Image (cartoon, rainbow, N blue to C red; front, side, top):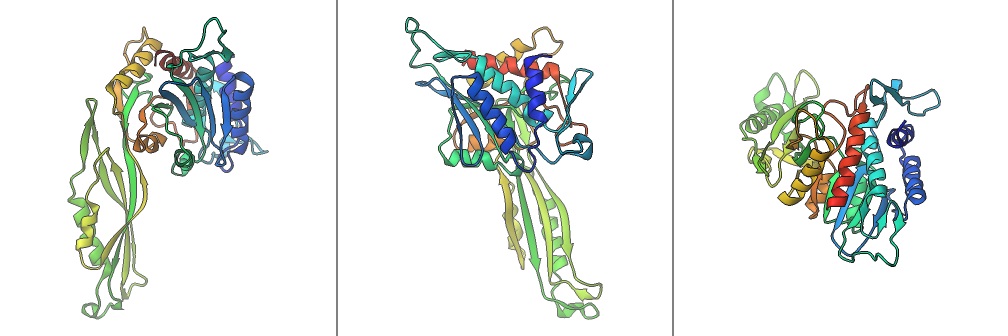
Length: 378
């Protein structure tokens, strides 16, 4: 069993859907034992480590929290199950995203950058290059709860110049190929509330039907054009969908209130003009959640990561490509504050958050090679 497979198994086996403390302890202790990096644990529970200094910073970013496991993914005593079969590791968090976190931990340790190689300080005869980049490792908490850890770290001054976020990018251009995502959509969840005046249903004209007003709002939403942008040659198109409606109290009462839930997948720099629904009498619009999209703003950095991905997959029938993702990640929070980001990781479409979640061992090893290659060529 490879060191990466064993490290992934150990990390995946630690429950971290309600409390990430134990998983964070594991990551922190491993970094302290295996590297000479400056390792810290912030009050939110994020684990951060730094090697080198003087130049621009490159961060390998992940998260060690997971969504709640299925019954089949836990043992009787509450531990997470981890199984290896047919070249894949099965268990909650293998794909999203402890497998990529483990690959990043090893790459962070092994990459020859700055003044250390595999945790060993260079000798006085071979001094460190003061302009060499700083290599950073970060594993956040609360990604599945809207980026709690990432936002806390950013508020505390976490602002790397560049970042490779290890969320899934495998299988986008072709099955089994680990691509490089230069953009992803965000998510804005909102509520449209229509208010009217209650009345007996036998005399509907004596009231103001909130459901009718809500339906007018739905019609307005349905007529909106979806925003679209292009990022480094990749077309990214957003969407807006009404996903729920709730109104009325009884069959014989004209409803005085009706709520409509709206899911919008946002694109970098654009938003659908949902505020237009407030032009309808008695209707107001409230944003409940706004996870930012991500756009890579540096073609050279994207090409650096893509080159590393190509080298790690040399000999395959299909070479990796620059792609976009439909899902929001912590890269959105980082990009919003000025960090140049790409997403590159082991998870494939349809694996995360499932009862049969798994990750390919071969792809995990490939991610290690990509992360280490990016760090050494940065």
